Amino acid sequence: MYYYPINEIFQTIQGEGYYSGTPSIFIRLQGCPVHCKWCDTKYTWTCNNKDKISNKEMITKKKKDKKWSYMNLKEILLLLKTKKWTARHIVITGGEPCLYNLLEITTELEKKGYRCQIETSGTKLIICSIKTWITLSPKKHQKTLDTSILRSNEIKYPILKEEDLLYLENILKKIENKKKHHIFLQPISQNKNAIKICIKQCIIKNWRLSIQIHKYIKIQ
Ligand code: SF4
Image (cartoon, rainbow, N blue to C red; front, side, top):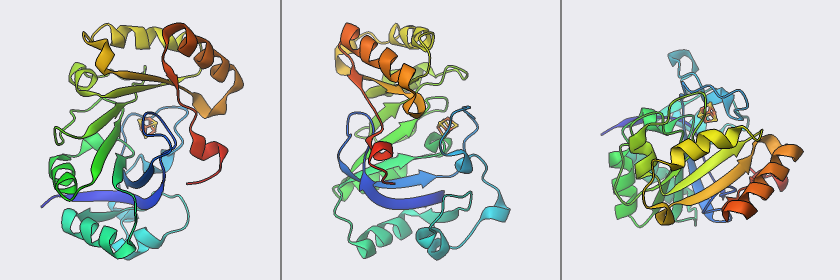
């Protein structure tokens, strides 16, 4: 049974992309080598033993920090049962969750009736159940793997400047059946100019806008 380094587990509303508005349980894994300048979860980047805490400490911690705890599937299932959370949608995020083999956790959670979603930069091989929904968020400073592009169900692309759209265009060239893909533009850090660029481009291309509603309504 795999052990996953977990930064936090909590129930909230998914604030981004296709499942925006859906009650969700977030499992945030520790570790990310991608290092985006504007990352809002920089505390997940390193996964050092000195920051390892107990499961209890991780589950009850109140602040966002780089402390993490190992949990296996059995322990995660027990926690979900104990918490009596009502959400049936599980978001495995990070950090970069695809640093880890997610086949066991996604397969078993889906067998229990949960729907799984992975949020990934697409820079690492995605190993998960075939049913899992993949949200690909490409970063132009690190190569997005072709396998990740083809496996994804939605592309949620962060925008700051007009030029950012060029990298997305290159990615979309690799997808033959574009009708199956949901494309979202997401302004970085609620930047006003980025919002304008996204709205304009969404209307031109008939794509969708993802505005990180959790940040506007100030929930986790
Ligand atoms: S891939 Fe995600 S977690 Fe990693 S640095 Fe970029 S935004 Fe942050």
